[in-house]
Amino acid sequence: VTAEKGGYEHFMHKEVHEQPKAYQDTMRGRIDESGKKVVLPDFHMTAEQIKNIKNVQIIACGTAYHAGLVGRTVIERLVRIPVETDVASEYRYRSPIVTPETLVIVVSQSGETADTLAALREAQSHGAHVLAITNVVGSSIARDANDVIATLAGPEIAVASTKAYTSQLIAFYLLGLYFAQVRGTQTEEQVAETLAAMQALPEQVEAILAREEEIKGYAEKFSSHDHLFFIGRGLDYAAAQEGSLKLKEISYIHSEAYAAGELKHGTLALIEEGVPVIALATEQALIEKTVSNIKEVKARGGEVLAVCYEEDAKELMKSVDEVVTIPKTLPLLTASLSVVVLQLLAYYASLALGLDVDKPRNLAKSVTVE
Ligand code: AGP
Image (cartoon, rainbow, N blue to C red):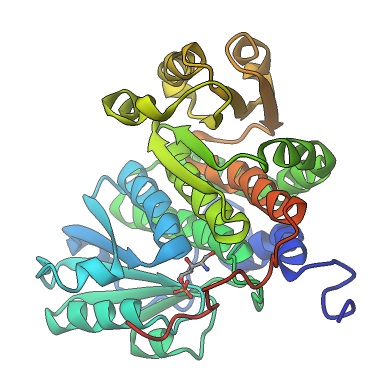
């Protein structure tokens, strides 16, 4: 069993460590030799079809849905097309407004999730072109979709999804850049700059993994609490939602992810002396706003751990209790790094509580019932 787990105690830990490779494998063959252009050899949509897209709907469940939240921002920022992201079980029954000019993107690690498959069929029945981002190319979702972008994360065994999620983010960056090339919404230089930053991500993830002991220490500290909050703005908020799910799923600690600016509209009432709050503060353009939300939390006695860039750590330390720093990347790519810290926090909290990390109670790896 240890051999199967590559010397790691748990599949989840192994899979967290496989992320640098999963990023590389998902990018391989999709960036041309000059490093300046995205090529998607297996993609069927024609340039004309891509130019005709009026709106995008991203549909998925759980962690894949959280990848879709990042995907929304990526496509909106790069391509300036309106994008909505919905959970599959809601989408299907809300009589979605889909036209032949709607691109529907379904995201699924397993490619077998019943809710996502049903949403795919619903969208196709309205004439939409459906693109699947999936980790299993022979899956039902891959078979039924009109187009597939495979994430090449390798088999994911742990119930808690890690490398599949981060590979889905890579797929969204590639897709967003590809559409931007076709529609001319980014210059060649901008595309090249983003691709260069993407290629630096695997090494940057390694740098985070090298700091595991420090992250483990923070996880052990908060693991005795019953409630915890994650806050952030923009892409930090999207990453916060994934961090919160990961923690709930394997540590059974109740947590909520809040848009930092939304706290004061209700949730702040729950912050009292000693409540742990994990604040993601990498969105540079919004950092001052996030800091003012952190101060609201501190004033009520919350214990704040911030995830931020090295260059902001000194300033943030004036307002928070502890910081975990991550290497600097482009604003668009930040979730690919910050989430790794959150995965490790969840993993070590579960471990500290002596729980079954790979097989949490009540959950299945692939949910094939509606
Ligand atoms: C992730 O940690 C969860 N186990 C779960 O939310 C999962 O992402 C969801 O069930 C969707 O699965 P899929 O990606 O295989 O469709």
